[in-house]
Length: 438
Ligand SMILES: [Zn+2]
Ligand SMILES: [Zn+2]
Image (cartoon, rainbow, N blue to C red; front, side):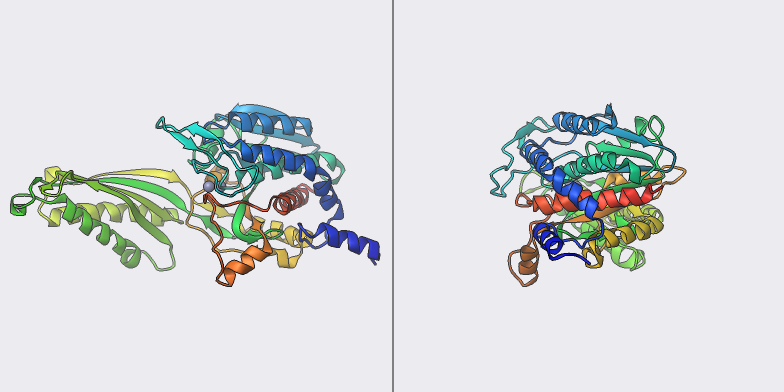
C-alpha cells in the first residue's frame, strides 16, 4: 500500500504529467533529466533550421547522444546522426527523431519564440519555426538515450538512435537509408518513432494500427490547347475550359472508380494559365497532390488520372499531337504500423501510462517518410505513435465549441513542453525496454 506521502508526491508530479503509476523509476528519470532537457528544448525551439540545413541541430544532438554514452556518427545522409549503444546479446531497436523546422513565422507569443530567418532553396529569405514539434521529438529522444544508458541492467541488445534531417520534404529517411543506415549500422528488428499530436491531451499517447499515414504523391499536368482571341473561341481549343472540366472530372476517380473503403484524396492545389482577359492561352498548368494508402490503389489512381486528363482534352477536340503532358512525382510511401508491434507496444504503454492515457486515433492522409524504414526487404516491423501535447483545458474548450486548436504547421502551435517531453521520454523508454528485455 502506498503511504500518503507517496500519494502526495505522485499527485504533485502529475500536475504537468498525468500518468498512472506503472514505472516509478522511469518517471523519476524523466523528472531528474527534465531541467536539462528543457534547456535543450528551448535552445532548439529558438534556433530552428529548415530542411537540409539542420547543421547546428544535428551537432547539438550528436553531442548529447555522445555524452550519454552512445557511439555517434554524424553526416549520415546529409545532416543525419546515428547513435549506437551496444549492451550485450539480443534484439536491435531503432528509435527515430526528425530534426527539421518549417518556413513559418512563429506567432505563439512565447518568450522563447523563434525570430530566426533563413534562405530557402529558391533564394528567398523566410522565417523559420519548429511548427511541427520536431524539437519535442529531438529532446525526448535525448531523454530516452540517457534513460536507456542509465538502466543498462534492465535490458540487453542494441539501441540505435536515428536523427533524421529533411522530414518535411520527405527526403531524409531515404538519404539515410541510401547512406547505409541499415548496412553500416546494426540492422534493427523493430523501428519506433513518435510525433506530437496537436489535438491530443498532454500525458496521453495515440496510436493507429495498420495504415497510419498516406502515400503522398504529386502530378504536374500541362493542358495544351490552341490559343487565340477571347472574342473568337470557335477558332481555338480553349485550355482554360478544358482545365476546368479536368478538375471536376478528376473527382470522379474518388467517387466512382475506387472502392469507398479505400481512402483517396486528389486535390488540385495550383492552376495557372493565361495572361489577359481577352486572350485564350495556349496552355494551362495544374499541380495535384494525390493521397492513397494501398500501393495498388495508388497505381490505379495514376492510370485513371492519365486517362481522364487525356480523354477530357480529346473530347474538346485537342489534336493528338497536343495531348496533355503529365508528370507524376512519387513523394513518400504510406506508413503502415505493423499491427503485432502496435499491440505489443501499446500494452506496454498502457501499463506505463495508464489505460485511459493510450488512445486509438484515426489514420491521416498526411505524408511521413518514417514509413520507408518498414519497406526495406526483409521487412522490419515499425510503429510511430502520437504524443499528446495540448493542455486538458484547451482540448475541452475546443470540444465545447471554443477556440479551435492550432494544427501542426500552424504559426500558433505551441506544445505544453514539460508534460509532452516527460511523456515522450517515459513512453519511448518503456517501449524500448520492453522490446529489449532480457
Ligand atoms: Zn510537419
Ligand atoms: Zn512533423
